[in-house]
Amino acid sequence: MLSEKLSEFDLRYKHSIICIGKADLADDDQPLSKDHVILLAEKLEDDWKKVAVELNIPEDNIEYWESETSDKQEQAIKMLTNWKVN
Image (spheres, rainbow, N blue to C red):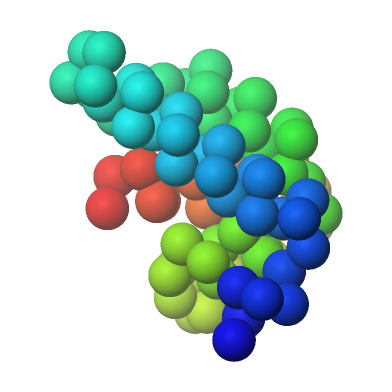
């Protein structure tokens, strides 16, 4: 199973994303703020694809963001922005 193969580091970031999203929604009934997205993207950088897979982001989206830019933080921002609106 994929979850079992992810390192504790990867799971910690996935958990952080979900918790921040839930906390933000619980507090204000609003989606993740742009500041949260940027902060998480900075922390994820190289690990953004692993988190994307765990969040069920389609592979086509991942490949598209990779083709748009080589900047890992920007790719992570695109992934998180997509995730928060869906």
